[in-house]
Image (cartoon, rainbow, N blue to C red; front, side, top):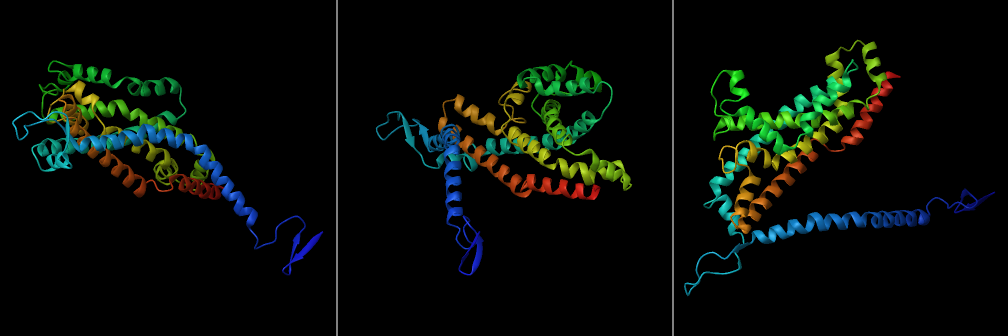
Length: 331
């Protein structure tokens, strides 16, 4: 049975075109339900992340009692200094230490992430192959990542000491754990050794999601191994690879334990932003430490935003479209 409404026939019991009132109520109800379900998570994030960030920024605007008042007495308690802590970081007496730590942090991030990405992808390709003893190889590759960072630092400190294995293999006496460029190289080697398996593990998970028929169709079309890697493997594994690289970038930007254990604290060549923030806090200069932490937080947030904006926009949707195109070619 049909009815006629404004000259347009419609099935009985269904709303006519042009009257989306029920649809609007459904959308609003879905949004309310989504907000209700997400509210506990948002509340926890606000308490765990939002409050500490705001509290840290507030602390950076104060300084512990230092100096004398007009009567010559020591000022007690915290006093509001505004942006003086930030001014001291960028242009004041702490500017030299800040820019040195900033350059070290950036250097470690760029070098380690690039090397880890190359080595991690190679590890994933090896672990993805079917050969006898593959389980043992996978377990052996993942062992460095499972070792705690402090233990890894002690291990590499023993390797890089003056009479250690590194100098014995090279046949030279290099002061790896002293303050200098060799210390930077030691940090890069130890960090790459430990965390390359992390990228390899995530890339391996992406490789296992690629359909086999895509490679079979490529081989039928005459594509060689290198062409298959650039045209099929790399585009389809891009979402997992970008997530792994982003996590590693955010982790290296907060590097502290490995340089502290392997080289030591207050070593200018390996001092990072996290280390100088810790040093300020350990000397009860909490306002300055909070200012360092706030600057580091903004630096990390900027890097993450630019990374996602420039490289990771709609990576999941793009991967699905790429897989769909490859399936159509295979059919």
